[in-house]
Figure 1: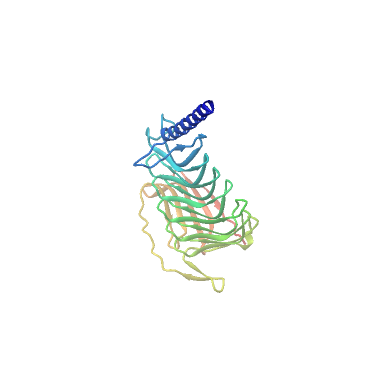
Figure 2: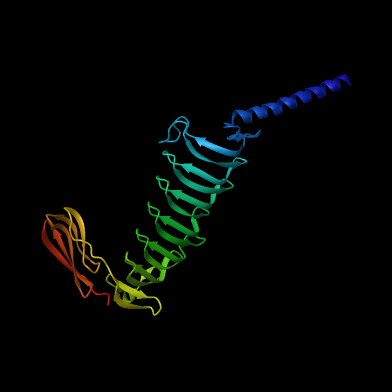
Length: 294
C-alpha cells in the first residue's frame, strides 16, 4: 500500500509539472497586450488563435525592426479566415481569405496609398466570378467576370479615367465574342465591332467620329452630334496630341516652337482617317494611306 501510494504520488507530480510546463511554453511564446493573448502555440507546438507577424532581425526587407507585417488567425497551425498584410508605410497591402492554409475566398489588394486596387473571389489560384479593378483615385477601371476555369466569361466592362464606359461586350471562355461597343470619354459611341472566338470581323466594324449618339432602342447610329466644348489648342514644347473639333487626333508627337519635329499628322475625309503623314527632324519623310474597312 505504501509503495502504491508513493507510485501514485510520483505520477501525480509528473502530470502536474507536465501541465505547468505546457502552460509556461504557451505563455512564453505569447506576446500579450493589455491582457490579450497572441502568437500562442499549444502543447504540440501548433500555432493557435490570433497571430501577428513582426519584422525581426531584418527578415522582411523594407520594414523597420519590430514593425507589424501581417496578422490573422491560425487553427492547428493553418491560416484561416481573413489575413491582412501591410506595406512598410503601414497601409494595407492585401486582405486574403484563407481556408485550410490556402488563399481561397474574397480578396482585396491595395495600392501603397491605401486605396483599393483589386477585389474579387480568389479560388484555386485564380479569380472566380465578379472581379473589379480600380484606378489609383478610386474610379472603377474594369468590371469583369470569370468562369470556374479562371477565364473571362459573360459581360465585361472597361471604364475611362473619368468614370465613363469605354468598352462593353461579351466574352466566352476568355475571348471576345459577339458585339463589342467602344465609347469616347463623353459617352458617345466610337466603334462597334463583332468578334468570333476572339477574332474581329472587319467587314462588320463601324467607326464613328466623336459626338455621335447611339440609339439603343432602334440599334442604329442617329448621327446626331452631342454638345461638346472644344479645348484650346495652346501647347508647349515637347510631346503633344492636338485634337480636331470633332474629337479626332490632328497631330501628335514632339513639338518645338509650335512646329511638329517628330511625329504624325492625320488626314481625314468625311470623318474617316485616310492617311498618316510622318515627320522626322521637322521634315516630312513619308505618308501611309489607310485602306477603308469596306
